Length: 371
Image (cartoon, rainbow, N blue to C red; front, side):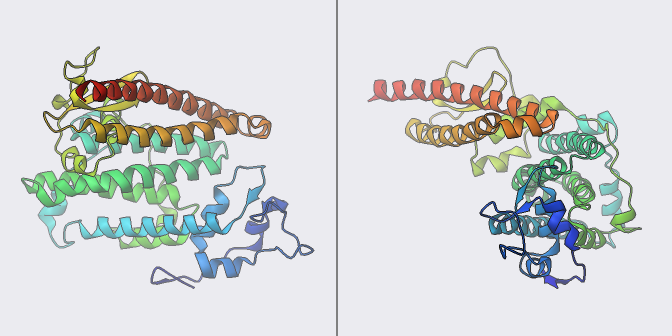
C-alpha cells in the first residue's frame, strides 16, 4: 500500500481488529457476520493507512468496547500526516549533513542535566520540560498496561504543544535569530524532542515512525531496536507555567515574541496591576491570573469578544469532564489514575471558568462607563 508517497507492505492481523469482540461499529453494534458490519482490515488500511488503524485501536480503553468509526480513523489519518509534516519541517531546518561545525554546535546541546535545561530560553525550556514529564507519564502507563493513556498523552503533547506551539515559536529563532548559536539551540531542541516522540509513538505507529527515524541524520540503528527514552530527566515547572500563561492569549502575533522572551521579562505579583483594565487578561489556572499591558493598544470590545469565545470553549470542555464523571461505567471501570486525572481537570476547568466570568463582568462594566 502507499501512504504519503511511501510504499509499505505491512498489514494488520485480524486479531487486532476483533480484539475479543470489543470492537463496535459507529452505531454501537458489536461486529458480527450476521449483522454484516464486520470491517475488513485490508480495506481499512487501503483507505486510512496501517498506522492510523493501529493508533485508533490503541486509543481504546482496555476492557471497554470501542466504537470504530470513520471519524476516528479520519482523525488519526490526519494525525499521521501531521507527524509526517512535522518531520519534514525538522529535516528541512537541520544543518547540512556535511556541515561538521554546525553539527558540532548543535550536538553540544545536552538536555540530561538540570543546568542545561534551566539555561534554555523560555520556549525551549518549556517544551523540553513538558516532554520530560511526558516520558515519565508514558513510561508509568506502559508499565501498568494503560496503552490508551500513552497514546492519548503523546497525541496531545505532539499536536497541542510541539506541532502547534513549539514549531511555530522556533521559527523566530531559525529564521530571524541574531546568530548561528541561537538557531543551533532551536535545532537541537527540535531534533531531540521529535526523535524521542517517534520512540513513544513507535509501538502504535510502526511504519511512519520508522520511516521518519531513518530519514533523520546519524541514525546508527533502526528505531525498533533503539533504547527507550531515559526518564526522570530535569524539568522546570516554573517555565512551564510561565509559557502557558502566554499560550492563553491564543494570538498568533504573540508567537513572534515567545522565542525571544527571557525569564526576567515576566513579573509575578500578588495583586493585579494598576492598569489591569487596559491589559490583555490571561487565565492560567491554579489561582493564577496574568496581565499583558499593551498601552493604548487594547480594544476592550475585542477583548470581551475573545474572552466570550474562550468561555464557551472552556464550558464545553468542563461539560465533557462532568459527563464522564457522571457515568457509572466510566467511574467504575476506568483505572483509578484516569478517573482522578479527569476530576482534577474538571476542577481546574471550573476555576478557569469562574475567573473568566469575573473578568468579563469587569470589562463589560468598563465598557458601560466609557460609553
